Image (cartoon, one colour):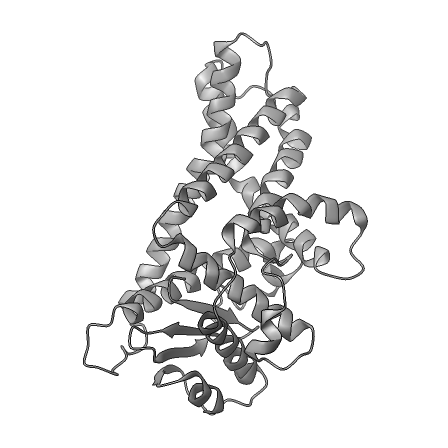
Length: 322
C-alpha cells in the first residue's frame, strides 16, 4: 500500500499509515472471513483460493484507508471512522472486477495468443499437444513480467516497493524471534518466500502443469474452432481455484527449513522477481511495518486494549507503547 503496511494474524488485521504530518494512523479490526461456517474450505488445497479472495477483499479496504490517510481531508489529527457497509460492498465489487480482469489477462489472453500464433504460422499444434501448453505458459510468464514491469515504471512505485520491503523485513524479524525494533529489522533481506509476487509466479507454473495434465484429454466441444477454444477457456476458469490451492500449499512448504530442494528451485524465479517488487526501506517505513505487525500480534495474543477502529498517534514510540 502507498504510505502504509497491512499485517494480518489468523483472526485480525491491522493497517498502519504514515500521514503527511508524520503522525501514524492505525486501524485495527477483525479479519473478514468468507463462508466461515464451511470448515472444509479451510482444508489444504481448498484454502488457497479462499485465502486469496479474502486477501483481495480485505486488501482493497486497507488500500482505501491508506489512500484516505495519505491525503487526509478532515480536520488536522482527525481520522475517518471504520469502513461503512458501502465500503464493504465496494470491496466485494472491487474483488469481482479484479477477478474478471485477472481471468482475462492470465487465462483468456495467453490461450488466445497461443491459438492465434499457431494458426498464423501453421504450426499444426492443437490443445492435445504439449507444445500448446508450453507456449501458453510462456505467454503467461511474459504477461506477468510485463504487468510487474509496467507497475514498476509508475511514479509511486518506488515508495510502494519500499513499504513492501519493510513488510518483509518486519516479518523476518518476528520469525527470527528478535524484538521488533528498527535496528533488528534493518539487517534482514527484503525478499521473503511467502511473498505474493512469488505466489503469482508459482500459480503460472502450476497452471501449465495442470492444463497439460487435463486439457489434452478433453474431446472437441464444438465443430467451430473458435467456439471450441472459447469453451476450453471456460473450462480453465474453474481450474484456477485448485491451481491457486496447490500453489498456496507449495508456497507454505517452501518457507519451511525442511523444504525439498526441488521446491526451492521452483520458487527461485519468484524470489528473483522480488528484486523488482521490493526496495530497501527507510527507518520511517520500517517503523510502520513493525507497528502494524506488533499490533496484529497483540490482538491475536490478547494483549491489545484497543477496540476495532482508527487511532492517530503523534509518533512511533507513542503508538508502540499504547
